[in-house]
Picture 1 (tube, each protein chain N blue to C red):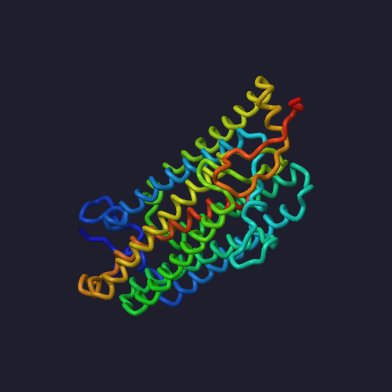
Picture 2 (cartoon, rainbow over the protein chains, first blue to last red):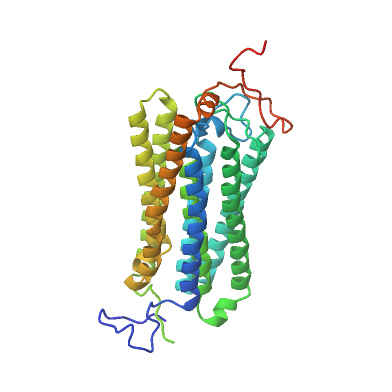
Length: 225
Length: 148
């Protein structure tokens, strides 16, 4: 199905798709571009709120817990690192699924999609635990129990932005998992086998990688700096 | 309409090798990011410029990770240049977006500190951590002046 292309191909000469991609994939790219502006706007407004305050809660003090850890154990960054690696690894299995699709390797697609879905659920479970934990500490929209790094009263901007942005990202992860499950069902029903190509997996893959990409930014902005 | 897949180059094994290479790069970058974060945590008395340098390094590492995900996992690097540009050029708006809004936030804070003494003084009052309860939304702050 792949055709050799010489460097001098006249892409705009007619008879060809000048971007060398199918319509759906191009539109997925434009959707993701617009979505990156949505996330960008969220993160930049978070930054603006933070820059307009004299002090801000220290993420290492806020996010220092771990499931099943005894009371008083401080493990900053540990839990969120695990979440980050889960998402990176699920991105890897997704890209392996896309590559398997390129080679019409149905078994490879199924195996890697299942792994990706498991990764997605693992990430969502981690986030659910973290949200529950923060809620029990008294944090929620409109309520911030954490003090600023310099010991002054923290602003509710901190929790509002945290729950809004990680919630919006979590919603994307959830949607991505649903899309991947649909892809898995379609693969199991031989839809792509009959169609002759697995390009739909590629579009789902783009979405999933974007979710991982956004997490890279959210993770850095909220937990590291 | 005819289109070709962008995977015409390289065989399956070579592509898989590239994927694992990128995975390792992403993991290493993440570990460096985390160790810089930990360095900041373990040295709370670090001076201001050092802290900003570390934060800058973390942001650069973040952008590098973003590049590897977009270029290799999302395969944008191997698309046709014109298509890459239709996606990347609009995103350069972020340069203005970030600078303008962070500068504005900072300027707002300076204005408040300089012209609203009450805001400034309020933001310097030490507070005590409230008990975990959703009924208390505003934990008590220590009074700046005795009430009696």
